[in-house]
Length: 393
Ligand SMILES: Cc1ncc(COP(=O)(O)O)c(C=O)c1O
Image 1 (cartoon, rainbow, N blue to C red):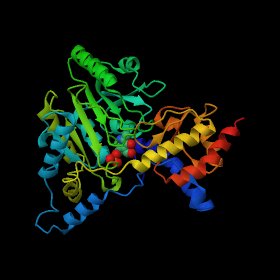
Image 2 (cartoon, rainbow, N blue to C red):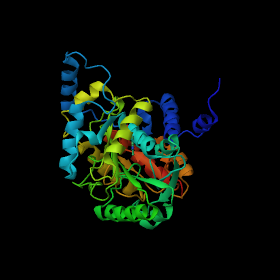
Image 3 (cartoon, rainbow, N blue to C red):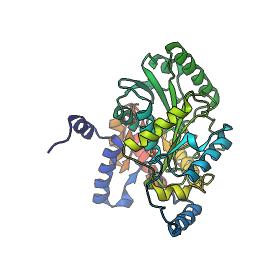
Image 4 (cartoon, rainbow, N blue to C red):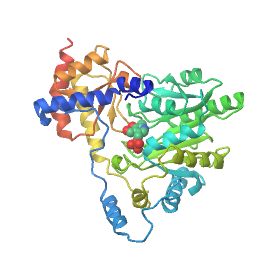
């Protein structure tokens, strides 16, 4: 038996995050887990908030019949209604339950969105550095990813983005707060992006969708507010999840939402529902849907992430690294001293520090550090960060 040539190629090129994670596993087996400083995986390590556990127990105890059966492909009415009310409050727009489809994580939401909107050969503009799975998700549905670089501080570069648009562009995907950079896009930039997409859509006679991937929306520091993406552009689709908000990535619950301002709003929502079915998700996990219905305003306490960010920034500054101070999410994306990210990640590994080379996110010359680890790990890694930089001379 053998897999398809496409999957074979994908397996061989498997992501840098996974590769570094596997190397880390081997190193931990050799040296002991406490001797290895693993910053490779963005796997939230904070426990879900107490309200989540209480709601989970209550949902499990609910013995009404039929609670574990199939349902409408869009999901249960109560959580969709609760989420529509949440979105309406946050974005000041008349969302209804029909604008929402509950999904298997933000990943599921992105896949149903691309399935619903892409014709073969349609292009999707992806901003680098990017969450690497975007390339796969676009390809999954016959699309072609076009990469546009962001600027030095990882803000949207409107000129580069404009240059990546063409007659086949069907969507632009943005992610703010951003993985891997921690950048949060400002309202003025989003408004200018909205104007650019409106002009482009009018010129080519079909809408370019703005797909906003926002699983880190509530993980922001210094009271930073993430501007509403729906205010910036009418033909916007949101993909998000409870993976980071509630620290439950393994439970696989998220949703896709269509802007109430989108042209063809109902048709697009219908396409998302169908895509959820025919991609084999059928519906999002039933128990989790019932659990989150009452938790739309609850999120994990982000104070530990904020403390780790501050500590990590101090450690890296003191050692002499150049980096952008993250405004959100839980990643740092420093410049690789010496310029070669592979070589520098290898130097860090000599200090038992595991990081992911920037080229895995479409920007070489940097490396990513995920701070989903206790502060003590960051503290203990500090001498290694210093030594790796010094060893470059
Ligand atoms: C930018 C971004 N988008 C989407 C996802 C997928 O999220 P989920 O686990 O909810 O599918 C992740 C996960 O790390 C992410 O970082």
